[in-house]
Image 1 (cartoon, rainbow, N blue to C red):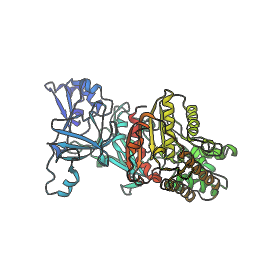
Image 2 (image 1 turned 60 degrees about the vertical axis):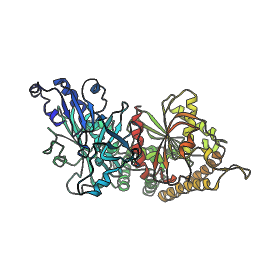
Image 3 (image 1 turned 60 degrees about the horizontal axis):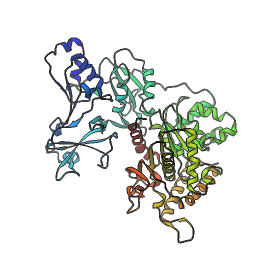
Image 4 (image 1 turned 30 degrees about the horizontal axis):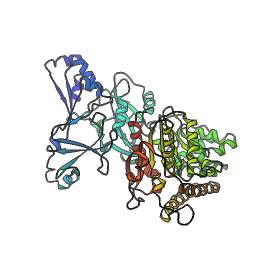
Length: 601
């Protein structure tokens, strides 16, 4: 790619009149560069891929003509395997991933090397037995890729380009592609560095810096604003540096060590908090989230907050301000200026915030992901998803928070589904719909999806967080009443006790009314589940499965077969009560974003 870029000037291209074919290999080939090359020379360009461990090139893609015109991404795909070579894209458990989902790229076939000379340890870690081949091996490339609809493979970057900064998983290549796709940007790369001098180059001290080569002078702030519409907030670089060219090593590859740091430390975006209430709130945000400073527009959840930290923030503010502050208020007003306006406004409306049927976790201009409450009746857990989903997505929690809500009023779970369906229709009259539910919330989401399908609507995504059909639970009818089998009841009680204990620990005093509501909702949910019956939804669903609490002999695919048209399972090494914890959302959030992005809403 560096050679092709060097020949972009017309005079240089004219010197290559005898060229008949050009083969590129060694690094990602930008689609824009390929199109410029085609316009200047008309010489067919071929993109090749392959590591030294597989005798160099193992795949190809024609980067010209109709094939190039069909490329939608920022880089040309690495394409299709050559003869006698195989390409597999697998997850962390060595299971194949669906098309459009990122995974680790593995190679098979006769081109694989025997191993590394005098390095049996390294050989054993990179060359493993092929589960799908008889006596053959696979090689782990260390690259991240995904299948495209036409069967080609798209290279997404190195797995060691995946960082974790302040608890957020970040793939630098995704940021590179987003910057390169902006008008006027010729090349782009992202680097994580400590700004302001000193410090360790690992962990929370690092910040993202973008580097671009452009055809004219850029407005860095405007570029960051445009990136904010394409990337989650934690993936937008804090500073962007324009270079005449990217520094290259002697072998023509990017030299990250030669990338210059910004001349000044990146400033906090947004206006400074006003004296008084805003300053008090900003100090509380910064203290709890361990940040030096917070602007008036900074979002508590985008900065790394979640429902449990919101509990602590509410308790801290109650003591500091000597006035009622609820976690619900923080949910609906997550920035400093929004929360200040809410707390200084009429008290009647403020005290209801976060305790209504619709919890606006984020309102935006794109599609809406509806998040359905578990047996607690509250959808606060889903607040952490705002950090992982594209900013275009709205997130609405559907709740049953009080004595007048569907969970308290209904005699059967069908009535709860009907009531929540009406709420969903009020928020979004027509499809496509996107649903996510945890535990009981997954049961509700599946039932509402079936109803919408029967009404002729489209449910484009149904996500289940460790949800099993109620019919598969062991109901004990021999006692003359519908009660849960002791083993099932024990799991429900663990979920209830974990939720309440965690909230009590984080919330402090003054929240007894909330805990009474939660206790009542759990008891009501158990009674409703005892008589629940699932309707069939013929669409696809995605199940995030908590393996630690999966009972011996349980088969999720078989359990859901009568009620779903298809099921994709993502196993997670956790218990049922942990699957909505901040730690697990670090795994679920990026995966959910990948799935939703692949639907092209």
